[in-house]
Image (cartoon, rainbow, N blue to C red; front, side, top):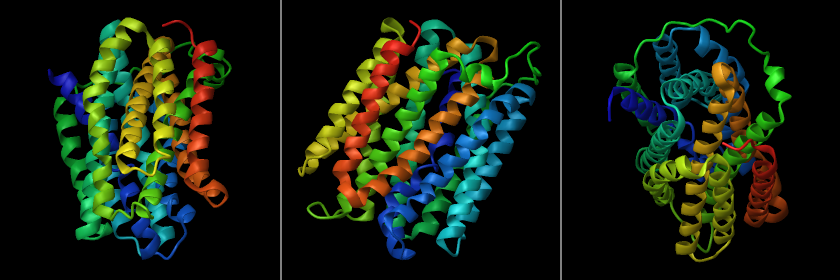
Length: 377
């Protein structure tokens, strides 16, 4: 990889290494804080909600601030708030610091996605977006795995401390390889965010982004509760190992990038949603090996869905891609917040089956949106 590609890879890793790291620790945090599932899941919901709320403004910032300065500030904020979260004395305090973490993520992600959209076009754009998503996969896996292992052997505070260290190291690699870009300033005649919200093609893409992260977060947040109970009864460190299925995405996503370059975004996204439905159905099984296959399929579908949807938005956004991508990230992470919270409310009614049913319903909606709402690209 050349230096711009290394910057994209390190940025993808840094953005996802700690955002979902607590998923492997949720059953244990229920015991630590003597709190029910839906309250403990707020440690995930708070972060993604903060990302969603800050994302529309992050697109504007990435267009008007010097890129390396903005990225450096985001990384510093992420590390400090993660360390403060590790010092929390109560569950509400932990939720507050996790919310603060999320406020620093959008500027980092929007800057990276705009960097990709500016420097690669056509088939190269599809491949580079898949490279970015591949490294978000690696970061997401490493964060969850390290947190699960450290939580089981060293405690949840040490787990958060280690993810902060990983964030700092990957951030240093990113800054060492990210070229300077002076602020371009607002585009003359640029549209307000409300303009993009009114465009059917963008409406469909924003809704698809919501559904992609909703499904992934719902699946991997609540599967930990499912697998920690009979007949599986897995421990925290074993639950961390479950996230090894993410590594399949490291192989599948780059291959999907080449396929996406040939088939286009629409066809690739339709295939991804179909695979997600099959994976969700497999996760209803009482056989652990079949659940793992289902999680693997769900992962691959989500990674391809994220690469395809964000690549489509960056391509359709033209010169205003930073603003549109910021808006897209708002809906994407709103989906993550809803995916962490809503299944918890449904759990008393139908448990894991209700969670899976909700995921399948959203994937069917995604198929309809892509089929009838996306421009051919």
